[in-house]
Image (cartoon, rainbow, N blue to C red; front, side, top):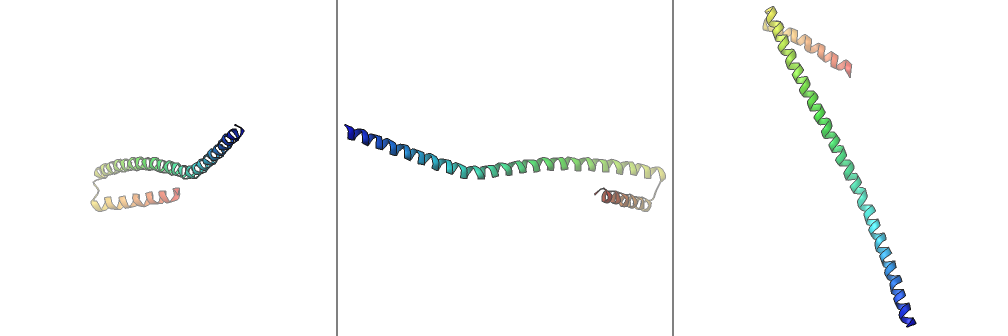
Length: 108
């Protein structure tokens, strides 16, 4: 009966050691997998941030386009008041374009 108890105890000890080794192997595998997962999550956050920024820029571009359109309409109305020729209108638009380029360059 003593031999049987020692044999069972040894089997249990070996089973426990094997389970510990299995757990350690699983934990090591989990650590290896978690690093790529963290990188992936970071990449997803970066893409989402870029999408949000792109949407903001698109809205800004739309707003600027609308302002430009309103400006061109009011400018055309002013031109009509003074009965300017196409050449005069083009010269004035060139002047304003030059001024807006200068403004953009000084803001940077």
